[in-house]
Length: 230
Image 1: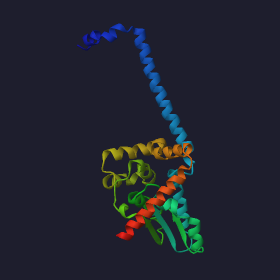
Image 2: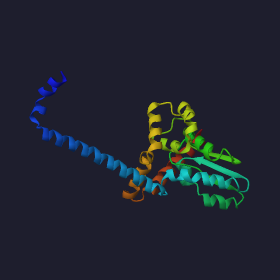
Image 3: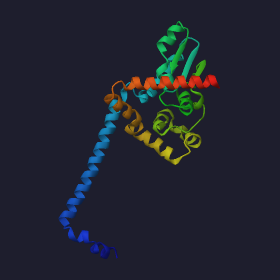
Image 4: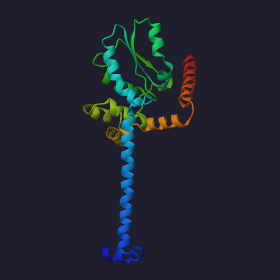
C-alpha cells in the first residue's frame, strides 16, 4: 500500500532520482546552516557573558561579594529589589553616608521578584546571614508569582540540581516553565535572551539605558504616591 501511494504521487513521478537527491541535499544544507547559526550564537553569548550590562554576570559576582561582606564589620546589610533598586540606589553614596560603619551588598536584579530573591538569598547569604535584610519593592510586587519567562535563567544560575524537585514543586508548577528552566541550564544564549535583546537595543538606540532609568524613576514616584495614599 505505501508503495502504491508513493508511486501515485504526481510530484514524485515528475522528479528524477537525481533531483530527489539534490532536494535532500538542500534540506540537509539548510539544517546544517541552522545548526551552525545556533552554535555561533551560543559561542557569542558565552564570549560576551562578561558584558557589564547583563544581570547574568551580576548573578555570578554576588557569591564573592556576599562572602566578602560576611567578614566585614557589623552591621551587614543585604539589599534585594528590582530595577527600581538597581538603578536608584547609589551604593557609594550609601556607604559614604554610613561613614564606613555599614557593610552592604546591593543584590537587586532587573525585573526580579520575591521568588528570585528567595533563591538568591539561599544561595549566597543563608550560610552567613546578614544582620539586616532590605526588600525594596512596590506595593503591587508583594505577591509571590511564578518567575517571568524571561527570568527563568536566573533560577538556572541560582538553584543547584539538588533543589530542582522543590523548585518544580513550589515555584515552577507549569510544564512550559520547567522546560524553559531546563533549556536555560543547557544554553547560555537561550538563558540570556533578554539580556541579548537589551544589549542589541542599547547598541542601536541612543541613551537607551537613560530611558530605562527615567522609566524606573516614574514608576518609583507612582509607587511612592500609591503607598502614601494607602
